[in-house]
Amino acid sequence: MPSSIPCSELERFRREGFLRIGPLVDGERLLRMREEFEERVRREARQYGLPSEWYRLSVFQFRDLWREGGSFLERLKDRVVLDAVRTLLGVERVRLVFDYLISKPAGGAHVAFWHQDAPYLPIEPQRVVSCWMALDEVTRESGPLKFVVGSHLQGAAAPVRHGDAEPDFKGREVIEATLSAGEAVLFDGLLWHASEANCSKRDRRAYATVWMDAESRYRPERAPEHAINAHVRSAAGERFDDDWFPAFD
Ligand SMILES: O=C(O)CCC(=O)C(=O)O
Image 1 (cartoon, rainbow, N blue to C red):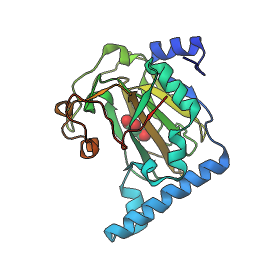
Image 2: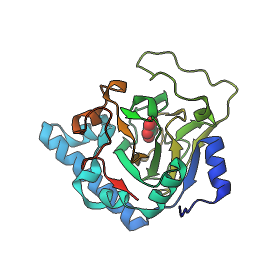
Image 3: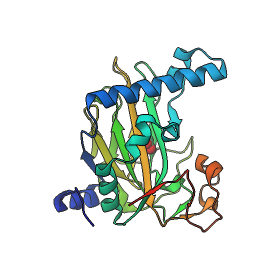
């Protein structure tokens, strides 16, 4: 299987659970992605009859951007990302689980509590790799992703629910993924991660795609509340063979 990831980096990913790549896009493409996203914010705010600036400050996660075509659809087909994800998952074909944009505007209060992504997903095996790409520079002040290095090796914990006690990572190495706009970090779905509020004067937007083995099966009972359930047409135990979950070699 051809791979753009050197063996040493692959070893590092296995050990640490994440890997930086990129820049994946140039300045012009970044501008287009930001503009397409801002247009979506304005459109949704209009649909709900809400002031667009209020909506922009309040809503932090937007899903299924690739379905609108344009730059986000283009991102799904990026060979660098597809090859990397295939290599990291150790499979021939990968399938999109879902995409999302996390918006942390300057002055917004959104915080992501410590969690792993895979235990929230209605799939088997619960093994995914995410590609989280910075649309703006991510600094220590703007609420970077924080990872507990190597924590994916502990395996899956029960999903963290609102109000649960914070897990204790005392004595563990935690890194902050500061990135230039257009750079990305690939991370294992079992890696514990979190992010603080954006305390800078600039927006911190990021676009993420979550990938599974194309052979993975639908297991609704594992995550009956997950938003992707609304789009699955396969029966429990089958592959995700429909157009909301495109597969790539
Ligand atoms: O972008 C962030 O600040 C948090 C993202 C996150 O927790 C996730 O992608 O699972």
